[in-house]
Image (cartoon, rainbow, N blue to C red; front, side, top):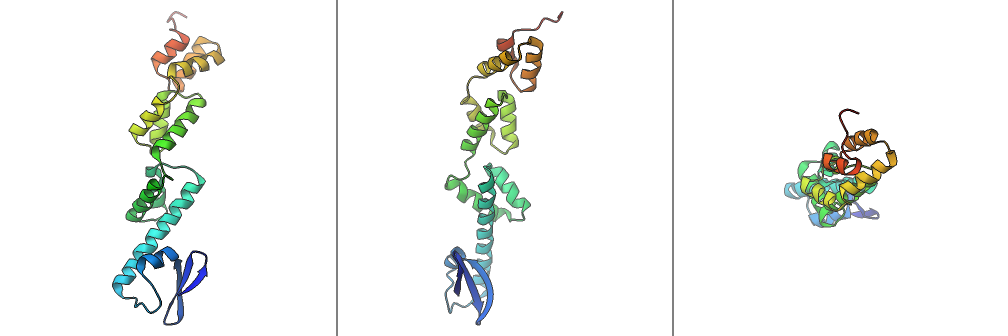
Length: 188
């Protein structure tokens, strides 16, 4: 074994270069000069390599964009990472606080609310992003009341009919729309 570059170790078999692996894999497998690579150790080495590759892929994925645990598992699966390795990587990132569905739900709900979306649209969008329903509902409960947001959006449009249409398209509840705009007469 020779240190290749930071965090990586070059493994040799009978004095011939074999492969380069992460230091963490070497430590978990108990590899050292003179240790015989038998079948059980090779199986452990393969499992730890898959685990390390899954963690590396997960970290690269969440470095670009916050994702829910479910969405991260899906992305890792699409990259060919085995389900067990993906689940382990996601669990490790959740325990470290890197992947946090409740935090993500709160941030996304706030962002969607500021862009003029109603509660049902926000919950729907969060669930599409793989956020559990309970976390989505809790995030929406922490927002400014929907009726107040609807009134502010309706005030920008001015016209009652166009306000109704806009607010309905944006996922506001009929009660919130009525509070903000009033009822529309059928005869109009």
